[in-house]
Image 1: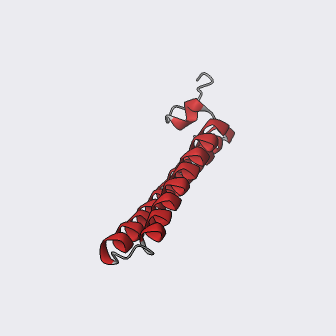
Image 2: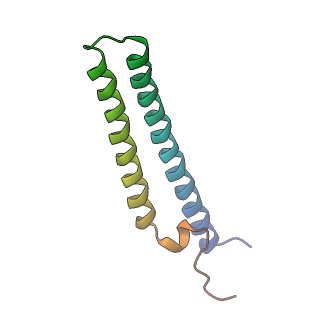
Length: 92
């Protein structure tokens, strides 16, 4: 059975998966910035490099917050029932 309802559900599923992939990209970027910050602090024990490391860690945290906010905003935009994988059913 094919129809507009099925196409709409598939489109919502693609949107949900794209939103999750985008969140994972933000998490990956966060980990990169935190890793850079920790490496800078650990490798270069100079007082001038420590603020750079802390800035990299702070930037990573801010990016993760922005990514999470975007994820939640987009999830609300297409409805809570679709975000849990349950599509609205309109009878047989």
